[in-house]
Image 1 (cartoon, helix red, strand yellow):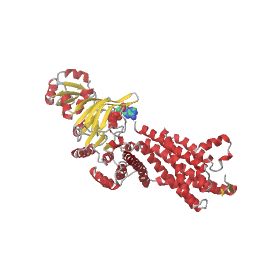
Image 2: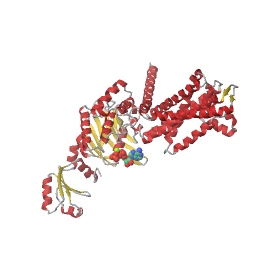
Image 3: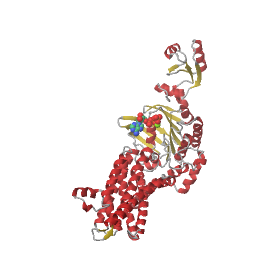
Image 4: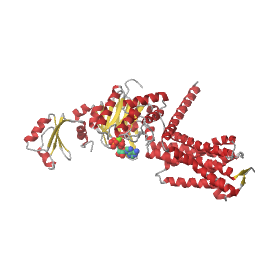
Length: 310
Length: 272
Ligand SMILES: Nc1ncnc2c1ncn2[C@@H]1O[C@H](COP(=O)(O)OP(=O)(O)OP(=O)(O)O)[C@@H](O)[C@H]1O
Ligand SMILES: [Mg+2]
């Protein structure tokens, strides 16, 4: 592999299940040291893409090269250098916390002495040392997720694939995971993350693609995408039970763009406070007014006409 | 020069495959150390032992002695005991490769994380088979010790029998693994159980196959347990001829076929 070549390079990559096209010709290039994200709603094809990158699901079309190698011919050699944290925790309930790491490490052919030392270090890293000898079953969701992440690191991978690393976790547990992933990034470990949380994507990713129906609808750094596809600020207006159609007609011309959701109206504007004042001037009385900065959620809404988390 | 290079590559990759399959088996050893699993293991051994006691010894008192094909005269217990070893090798291998393999694949989704490592589906199948053999070999050792102690065979014959029991386990493990990948639900295991009982009762276990009429006899001689029983009985009673190679060949063939089909099916199921 030559210097500067992307670690992961997909061209017109396709995944079909029968007639159904889950991934529909995506182009992706991930560079060394980068944290790259797939953002998209349920069924967008994020996991299908990740599984192809993880060399456990053969591509149905297009080309894919990982670490300069071909996933079909060199699957085992590539997987030896990947760390995978799948969407569903697939921990081994019959084993203890530390055995989940040591047994897994043997699949990589690591010598026993190194395995023991590394397992202890990784438990320390994800703050599970006290639970080392406990069974996995009674661990909380956040602990299981952290253990899965530790397991993904047992072979000191060049690339870590994290499929929805914090879905289902409480805010505290999420922040702990984010902080650990950030440390990994500091160590120069390349990461690919899927998520349908825009705050997660904004926090973690250097660059991301927004996926919908198996296609990439936008690509760039989080801030770039927001600048490109949204305004600086957003005003969220709620009007209780009153029908929003009648209200939205009266908002014509406020801000740069309006978006009506089932329960609220979004006003896109460079200056949210000015827009909010204009709403007041038009004698509209929302039950609540929230001015916030634009996020990737707004990018997604703009590109697809739908919200990310429904 | 080039051939040595190629050969050493092949050897290295075979060693890596072996190492990874062993790692899969090792997972089961580690899991078994914790759980009530040991009791499950013991039960698979106790059942044939009870049969040996009730039928071999009990019925044997009524039947008296028994003359084998080559004229050797043995007690009925010595006639039935090797069949019980073959049956316990079958039970161990089948339980491990159908029920447990199916459960691990479909319910525990244990291999979903394993295929993300360098371990290939074929190596998973091989590793599970290795574990099934280990379990089967433990039964066989225990059984052979009991037989030797009871004077139903000699220590040397018992030693010669052990590899044969492993071969029986390998053949049934191969079949079991194919069945394990074919199972749709737990109900399907009832069919397997019926098949196992039928084989257990009729594969020349309690009475010689020569006693049946032609058609049942042909069917019976197609079952792997028949060949397993014949092979093991030949060794524990030390009364065999060249036909024993036929039994060995049949079992090797079944094992190889089972494993290669199972490996292909496992791959297709785990990597859609
Ligand atoms: N093995 C499979 N067989 C058939 N269809 C599949 C299979 N795996 C995924 N799909 C389909 O492909 C589509 C994309 O699924 P995928 O899991 O990649 O989405 P995702 O973006 O990860 O969604 P989520 O956010 O819900 O995890 C879905 O419609 C799904 O039903
Ligand atoms: Mg997914």
